[in-house]
Length: 244
Image (tube, rainbow, N blue to C red):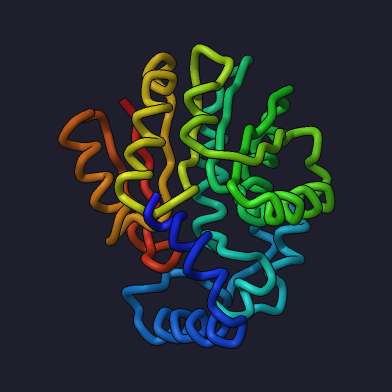
């Protein structure tokens, strides 16, 4: 909540030149510190699961260009890790997939493509606090040809997870905030539904900071199996998959 509060109060009040300067400093730090970035650029875009995703990332050669093209997305190779983690987790019928932190809809595209490729009549239920980025996400998902596989919401992610009209969740991608307490609140809201079917919870930015602290608490309180992929994504790098 603290991170979201700062993003919505302090950050918008800063003059745009200050915002750009601070953000570029963060990106430069990531580009020069191998501990802050594991996102790749010199790779075959044909490996990506969706052509629009490949088009967004085409021609990018550093983090600043990537953020301008696809937003604060996990990037390659994490896109493909997310795709296959979901594809291998889907039941034959009645699949329930949720995402918090829609952003520009790039990770949403990855998961929606997995649903389509699996031949399932299901949707990614995704939510973000920012209505403007949700509109951007809708455009990206439409250009990817996947609108039938996504259901968009604007609002609070914890309330969204608590109010899901289902008795199970097969796959949850929790990426609305990297604040420890917020990650834990989201996890606590969805874990009964995930446990009910032996589903999976997917996390980004896991090697340090709030997500890493949240995962330490998940291990202590909930046990289960946690597999970490430290060499992907950025700021900080790392993805992780939890299963009860």
